[in-house]
Image: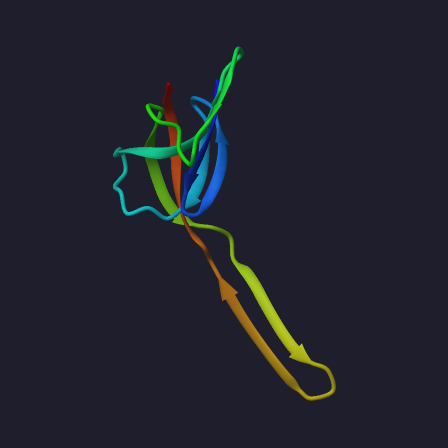
Length: 102
């Protein structure tokens, strides 16, 4: 059984016991989070929501949070001696999918 869930403006395909990194959530380590379920599928049938599947629950546990690897942004204009270097580290929350119920 798998589900398509939405959090942080992005959609993820998840199964039970999957670990995924999502946009930063303000929950503490060990908290349970319920995610919006857009689609549920098992071996026999597939149910798509409009926009969410009614009665479907995807429960996840917060494992921790942190920052991703640094992305370097380097902009320059040739022959003008204009250079700009900037870095960015995106914060994330790590979730473990505990159960998908429908």
